[in-house]
Amino acid sequence: MVALSSERHCEISEDHFTQAAAIAGVSTDWAAVAYFYSAYHAMKAAFLQDPIFDDMTRLKSINQHLTPEDRYTQKHKVRRGGSGFGVNDLVHLLYPSTRIDYERLHQSSLGVRYGQGVVYPIDQLAEMAAGISEARTSGMLVASPL
Image (tube, rainbow, N blue to C red; front, side, top):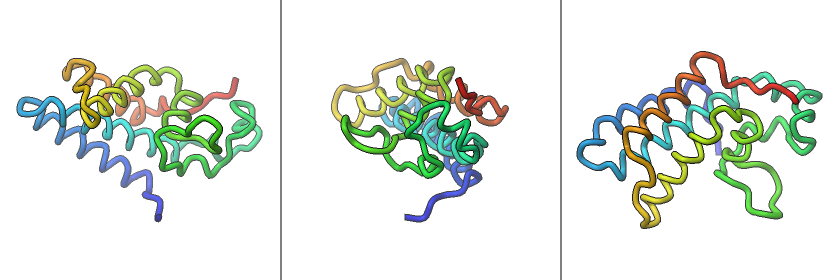
């Protein structure tokens, strides 16, 4: 699988956000999924732009098992006992200020896709996704070693 560029992830993120806003009045369920994937692609862009992945000393100061290749992960989470990191794991490790909103967006997306329904009000999900996008565009999604 060919990895997307950070620019392409940004375009997809913005498109998903626009689509979510457009369908929110018709289907809050699928708007929730689109808001999550807007945040997902914003995070994927942040991983590609974050200089920490180019500095092994700083990267290992966050977690000794992190590698530069982890920025390309395609998984949401790594199962217990699995190797590597998923996007959720990286968000938790690298960008703790966005962790709660990202997890809530993911929970809502899972709720829609697996029968529980939207977990949080759609207006809150929109704010969470917009906040993550703003953090990325303003340069706030840059990991700091402990």
